[in-house]
Image (cartoon, rainbow, N blue to C red; front, side):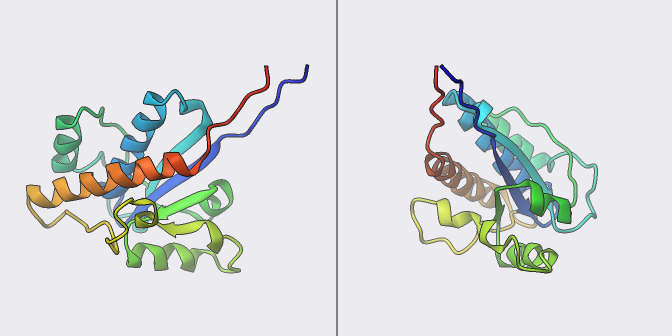
Length: 166
């Protein structure tokens, strides 16, 4: 009997600086996939549209919010590249500015179909964006966490579990 091999789904989360929303989404999605026994189905990363925070860990307030909800915080900020457009199957942006910035990287519109707003995967369907909590207080970080947990669950459901031939 032949064993089937399915390449992992490559999922990239993108925000502006890659220190709040996108690394949090990466961390949440990684844990959800792992908890569902599906970690091997995904390659998950995050990036920012600017390089100002390159090499920085997630924002301390975002990290504390994640840890309070039981997540292990890791990662370093990096800027999205045109290579990412080739590599990733789904590129999820946190707001309209991030969406426009990533689409501008796609000079020939070859990858526009896989650049999508993160909120498309939220079950409530009422949010237009995942707001940047950077200049706000704890309520902003909690709101972002609620949106990210909801949307990451939607992303996991979007990808049907891979059935391996045995």
